[in-house]
Image (spheres, one colour):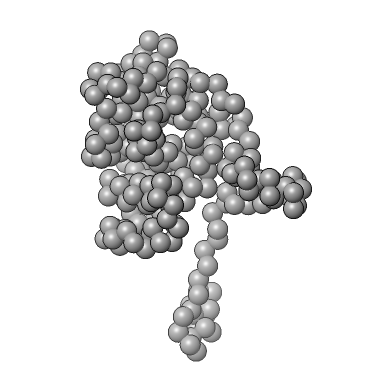
Length: 239
């Protein structure tokens, strides 16, 4: 199991002044902890995408994780996604897919940073952390952008009491997350117990691990020409 780490949550607090403290004496809100904005030439897609894209991603994740909506339906029913630019819509979809593919790893990283589990009433704050961790640890979003936008979205979604916690956990993982990920069993963590047991019974553990690792990969781009008679023309243009 995960060894609970350095941050202490006071979920009853309703002011940022009750944000978590690290055991080394640094306040979760204090200082930049070495985080520096990337030069303008290095601004990534994750940094450029705004709160609209992240808010849409949060909505879809909550529909899938808490209301058990199929992902395709949740994506199709979210009107805000269609209103986003192509770039932001692509970022939102990638963030959603990353959280769902690596949910076991992400939840393990979050648990490592908490002295005790988040209460049920903090479900939205937990989902915000999942989104922030996915951006920083698996999508390469710059630390200052991942932290700032996640904290800003927490404020916008009525999660102000957890802003300090979110800030502290994301900054802790910016420092230590890579080494923690290196020690994770990604294949096992990201497959539910019931499915792992079913696969291992049917295929054995070695093949099950191969399947699980394959599921973590972003699928290749698949282009299809829909108009009859234009397949050859489409192939020529893509060549």
